[in-house]
Image (cartoon, rainbow, N blue to C red):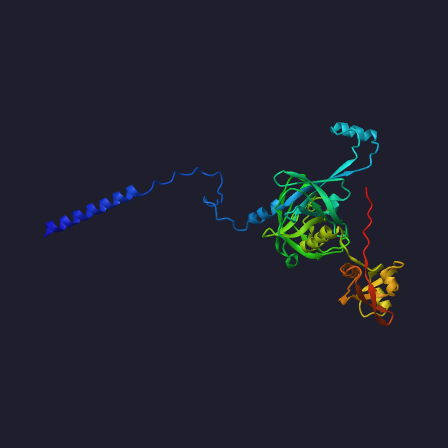
Amino acid sequence: MLKKIWLALAQGLVLVAAALFVVQWLRPAPPAPRPASVVAVKEAPEAPPAYPTPMSFRAAAAKALPAVVNVYAAKAQRRRALSPEEHLLRRFYGLPEEDTGERLSLGSGVIVSAEGYIVTNNHVIEGADQIAVAFAGGREARARLVGADPDTDLAVLKIEAGRLPAITFADSDQLRVGDVVLAIGNPFGVGQTVTMGIVSATGRNRLGINTFENFIQTDAAVNPGNSGGALVDSSGHLVGINTAIYSQTGSSAGIGFAIPAKVARSVMEQLITAGKVERGWLGAEIADVTPEAAAQLNLANAGGAVVARLVRGGPAQSAGLRPGDIVTAIDGKAIGDARGAIEATAMLRPGARATLKLVRGAQVLELPVTVGERPAPSRARD
């Protein structure tokens, strides 16, 4: 009996030893020790994470980048005589010792149609004799001006370069404060650049930049050269055209302004079809109703816009409007201030009939008026 027990125990030990040998033989060799790091750091996994990575906007950037171009505009200027000091400086810096009479402007643009239409800022190409665009890959093409609208600082260019990668428009009215946005352009001429930020505010106006202002404010870095470039959402869709910054140094201070894509599209379509943007005009100079003026006129509040001056023979004078009248509504739309009156008038179709609701002394009147066409703004040229 004891012999059988010892035999069974010996067989068990043999089986265990065999099993350990097989496990040791099949187990992979341990990895070679990694060289010690100078400092302890957190490292990402060696295998790359699935595309797209969390909190990465590479897909949005990749979608929008091909549709953003650099815009170069050459503007002829009157030649002038250089002073001896300027001659000396030009010689020192290796520049031509005469005034070439040409000034270059650098900005950005957005391809909005595969047929070659590009939207940019008017101030980028204003007064230009020659315009060229450069694509992200370095290819260049001559561009012609289709039309410009100084009141919104927008312009449309056309190039002949086959089918192009056009950007996708988003509904800019759906933007909310805090939404992530990317600004794409060519700041300082360094090359195509993408910066990220959020929507800081919407509906910004009274900045004195354009006649009609309804800006998207963002803290995405926007610098000289970004003008006319794209502001896109986290999907790479166009929400605005970068146009201006608030800065005391000329560099980004975290306050940039973009024209909403909805406005840009409306202006673009009118420039392409008619070569200009038609806006309503009444021929009246108006001002805000101040609390002091409201008290003097015994008004319940300071809303509306007061007529300060009339253009002789203009639509407003022909309709019977008088200086001192306070316009409170235009075609049923309440008017809160002078800017509201200008914007409501601009939305009217030239030649259409509109109704002005106004306060004249103790009377509340309604005057029908035939809307005129807003004259093109006159701007001084260099």
